[in-house]
Image 1 (cartoon, rainbow, N blue to C red):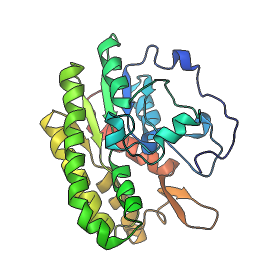
Image 2 (tube, rainbow, N blue to C red):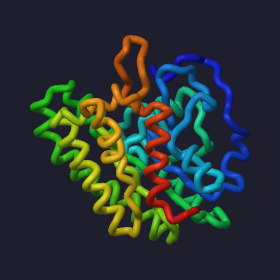
Image 3 (cartoon, rainbow, N blue to C red):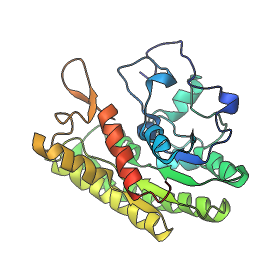
Image 4 (spheres, rainbow, N blue to C red):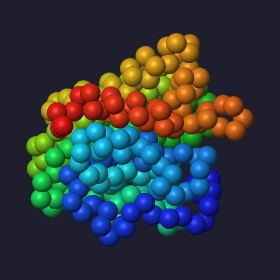
Length: 265
C-alpha cells in the first residue's frame, strides 16, 4: 500500500518549495524519509537531506521520489517500485515537478542562481525490482544480477553526465551508498557491495565525494551482531521486526556521514 490515509498536509507551500534553495537532494524513498508506519504526510517524513540541510545551513529542494529506480529517474515509464504510482495517486512530493527527476535536476541546476550542493542516492530499488521480477527466487536473481548491475552502471553514468555536462554544474556532489539490513547475510552484503561499488566508481570519476552509508551502518550495527534492526537504525514495525527504511536514528547517521565528507559548511 502506498497510502495509509487519503488526506495529507503539505510540509510547505509547494509553489515556493524550491525558492531560495541552494541544496538539491536527489534519490528514492531513503532521501524522501519514507516511513510506512505513519500517515502519508510530508511532515511525518524526515530523510537525511533534512538533517544535511540543517548542518550546512542551506535550504533544500528535495526532489526525491518514493520507489524511484535508476531507470525511472531517467525515463518516464521505466519500471520502479512505486514512484509512478505515488504521482498518479496525487500523493505529495517535497517539490512539485512534471516529468522525470533527472529533468527536474537539470532544470534546477540550470536556473537556480547559485546552486551550492547536490546529494544523491539511487539504485536500491533496482535490486528490489530484480527480486519482484524473479518472484524472489534466488537462482533467478543470481542469474539476472549481472545484467541489472550493467544497466545500473549505464544509468548512473548518464545521470552524472547530465548533472555535470548538460546542467553545467561544477559544484560539490555527494553520493550516499546503501546500507544493509543484516550484515551477516552474504547475499545482501554481496549485492549491495557490488551496487555501491559501481555507483561510487562512476561518481568519483565525475569529482563527487562518497558518503559511505554501508560502512556507517555496519559499524553501528556491529555491537548488535550486524543487525541494523536491532541497532535501531531501521523503522520498527508493530510485530517487533523492522521495515527496510531507515529510522530517525538511521537517517541522522546517514546525514552525519554525508556531512563528514561535505566541503560545504
